[in-house]
Length: 311
Image (cartoon, rainbow, N blue to C red):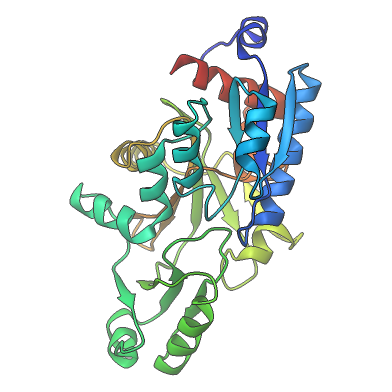
């Protein structure tokens, strides 16, 4: 990755306000990400202020007078373009993708439609409704992944193989979002690659003894295994990197993001989703990948700030 100048970044950055918490179902993870980033910014000597976002967020922002907002709001109203739109209206620069890219990435159906239009591989899918033909879907897809169209942290996701279970998990998923989709289950290893502007972080392999990489596997299960660097032939790695860049660019993303994808038994890669506000705890995927290439958590924060200053 390119060389950065810590002193120059610190001299230019001014006051940074970290937005965290909020009211989405991902509040707990957002608080952990925000607290980790706040601690890192303070270690760097940056003038940083934390805001646990509530109904008074406009007043809090006006009071704090930020030169830059470091957005760590995961999920609804933080990752979907809503907060980005507010910050645009207030003329406050912020980390990560803009309004449109954030909204598209948060909506798994919209992002899949764009990727399909661009010729990028992603699993076959159907939008579910109360009148869906559950048996026909399981007949067509076999093993099915049920997931909320808008959401993160693997909340509301389940894998089923029969019509009765599909309908049951659809009802459960509606607790997290009003729009639910069914996706053909890709069986094989799951990977994740962080993107920071025009640079890629090392790809990581995610392994769990659970049925799939669910919320517990991501944040609770100590048996979860993260491998980095991954053992992938160079030709496949080149294809992987091209796919990650195409997925990021096709949605118009900027700054930090993370692309998740799977590889089937034939070696083909399939895009799962793109996260425009990836987790930033010390154990999250992006900081872990950075650490494996010798970039500390604090240096990663500097690189994120440097990327925003360059825009």
